[in-house]
Length: 384
Image 1 (cartoon, rainbow, N blue to C red):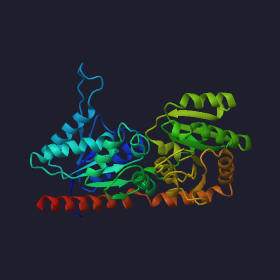
Image 2 (image 1 turned 90 degrees about the vertical axis):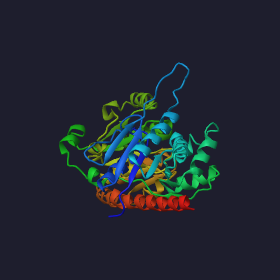
Image 3 (image 1 turned 45 degrees about the horizontal axis):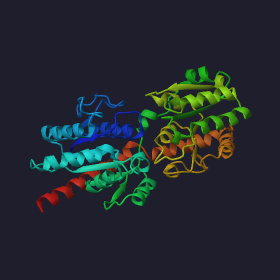
Image 4 (image 1 turned 90 degrees about the horizontal axis):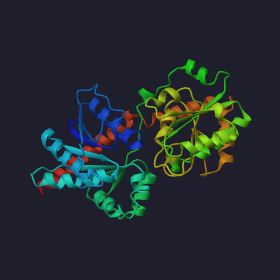
């Protein structure tokens, strides 16, 4: 096995894509024998401690009357310094540029004054670049932090291209795609669950997201309404967020409430996906489309928009179909084609076959090799 490393992972501890990917990456690294230290403000939602190589360090944020907003970035940088020094870490891997990359830069400078040289790898996940990063309030810091990182990765070619387009980046950006643990998402036979939701053999359609405007939740409802008019079908909505109330209101207006269920946030999404027939992702923007990959890993074909990094995952006419953003009619037509009992088995088979290409077993070595390259480069710079 390659050299064992001590790695600090900084991420958001939420159900969002960047937090999920960071947590699953850390767990996979720990299984390979690397020592992994998570540094964040609460325990990541998918983190378990069934491996002796996994550690968690909570960033405590003190509240003072002077601060209207507690300075999380400073507390995070201080925690990074402490963990690197006490645990003798080899490398810091920060996920999501804001504020993790800038906090890592601060920690790196403090450690350097103590004679400790810690390389920092920054992974860009999407909205840290495409939305928040473009804000004039943050752009100079985002640009500086990315350029000061010792290694930079992006989850898709589209995100890499967009980062270069909108920021003055001098660093090389390596594309390492998102991934899934195929063992976890392996199709689970839960016929009793499917029968409870679809007692008369209806087609089961699923959507999962954080219900933000960019996810176009209204389009999910509209596409399902059109499908529902043509064939017996049910819709499961997984997740929560600001657009949920409006989506529930649309269901009432369209009189489809009996066939739509809002399940809220679920940790074990694979249990629902395992019985689904079709996944809808009509997003305005996706840097990769992790939720679609999770669906495909459960043999569920995808109807998606053709934006961002989604075309790098969802193969037109093979694993599903892509439509222009907001093209409800086209999405409906293609959804009905997939749901035809003569077509569905082939799409399901293709979806799983494509998902296997993104299994953690294939992607983990890319990260390990990248870490080693960054460590070698940093070591050479220190000697020089």
